[in-house]
Image 1 (cartoon, one colour):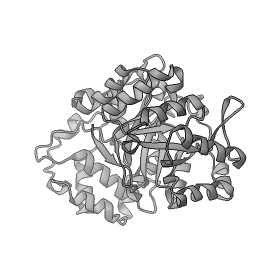
Image 2 (cartoon, rainbow, N blue to C red):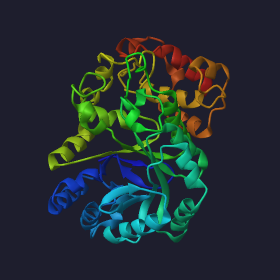
Image 3 (spheres, rainbow, N blue to C red):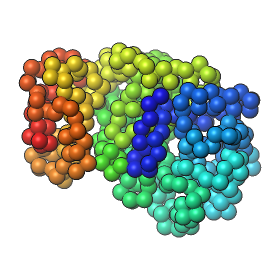
Length: 395
């Protein structure tokens, strides 16, 4: 298992995580066994947004005796009322629900205290101006939560969280289909009435969020990486083609700022499939060919950091150079405009991006312009030209 820094939290989380949503489906013993098995495979981060007692009890029992080797995302604002889950900001429900979380998880702290499910600006404003955020800060000061996080499906809210300065990480929904759709305050409407023309390239707000997280050191854990299984099924996939778990995991993990993808599991075999990503070949991870050959897509001209451009005769890590170039050009005043507009604006390159770029073994300045990489790019990116621009911008 590989581990990544979760932003600036200081936590090293497994690239493959555990999304706990499906635990309630099975008897307690089976679900406890699943978590224990996942931990044996190197998984060390689990999300518990669920408010039901059964799911919480399962996680608590699975962590018994090894609590310190787990990182828990525990949600504040996810409550259980009259036998059902209710998202709320009403403190008469929020406080006891969080206290119940600690009791059932058999712990006195939560590593990542998640402000639960904020998708609208109205909700964000309500949270940030009242008792709710005061309670979150109180928990942080007492050590009941070690770090403050937030879960959202809306990239605009994610950007607001990053800009707040005190949200240390976010849980965000990432997959190839979601990335092509514009921001919405209602995730249920994300694919209502879409057509091929509207299904074109990564949404600028989502791309901006990933770049902001990378620059500011706000870590991302990924939810809905499989789109509830729809992307694994040709008939249900918005692309009209099926992906494999390894391809979807790789897609998520190649987005800037991403530290871990939290997959849901019903069986040990499903855990094995996800963890097998760590030893998968480049061909097995190749999501780009699937997207490029799908009947419903348009990523033309956009680098998705897929790595198809390898190998380079002078061993440049082209995908990483492109990622740092995109991060740098996103800093200009015209960041929401075209790449050319941003480049001409001569943006100030963030020191963190500059240092990461300089740490590369080979940089864009070494590009010999052979363009062999361009013949392999499934999206027709003008790579040689981008290497020239990157060398001029980044040194």
